[in-house]
Image (cartoon, rainbow, N blue to C red; front, top):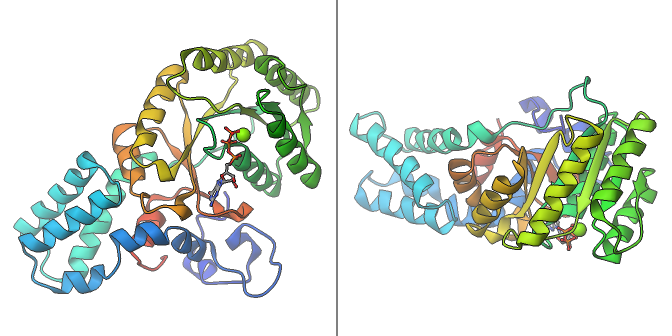
Length: 335
Ligand SMILES: Nc1nc2c(ncn2[C@@H]2O[C@H](COP(=O)(O)OP(=O)(O)OP(=O)(O)O)[C@@H](O)[C@H]2O)c(=O)[nH]1
Ligand SMILES: [Mg+2]
């Protein structure tokens, strides 16, 4: 939906606005796949660099050790690494992999197999109006920025959007959302700092209902998954939404910073236990070599990864696509 599942002919185009998710403004725009590959360059450096050359060597134990080490260094995690290595080893033993390209394809397939089950884009069914999204996560994960980018994308897809400034803890958070709202002509429902978060979100949902808005997105204050009282607070926000609309929130979206690697797993586990997550966004993958954490997340948590953030621009919030992600990591092209 966000210009992510394009055909090859469109990917290669640098001028098609829908391919990059943004209007063309300036010289040759990159395709979404180029942006993805660039955004994942740090992890790609650890995981995929010179893999082709490496695979030209004899397929032996040393090669497998090197591969395993790379997966672990990229924060793929022990279990997911074992799954990948087991599958490739099995295929080698069967005699299926006798050249570098076959090995590369087997690695790609083994990695995609882990991510595929969580590669399920956010869908906004026409019957659910307003569709409501509750955004949660620890401090600084990228919640508010992601909401701005997401609202922008949803508008481009023709949806009307309303935001609720449920982070009543920081004054700057409300301003951050309001600035974004003004720029993009999106209503932001807010109360003063220190107001009850649940009450702001309730107001937001009510306003969205009254105005016939398509999608309501609620921001919340950053909180640690270990802070019981703050987790209770966000549970209350969720409950209160449900009072106004029995299917609300339609999406409970956890935002995690990809740079936190394996730590993001604990966050996801505990937020999932407390709230029942329906989606995850992994941000800041452009700033880290730990992008392999998505495999651990998929393997251990299993909640759909809706979007990934691979840069600061609005179009750097991309719909997560397992195969494109793996191919970008391995330095393969985007078809
Ligand atoms: N490079 C990069 N930076 C990002 C990305 N997503 C968010 N950021 C940056 O991360 C910082 C924190 O983002 P916020 O959106 O304020 O995070 P938050 O979760 O709302 O933070 P709190 O409200 O304090 O809990 C900002 O400087 C963002 O620009 C991304 O995908 N890539
Ligand atoms: Mg915020």
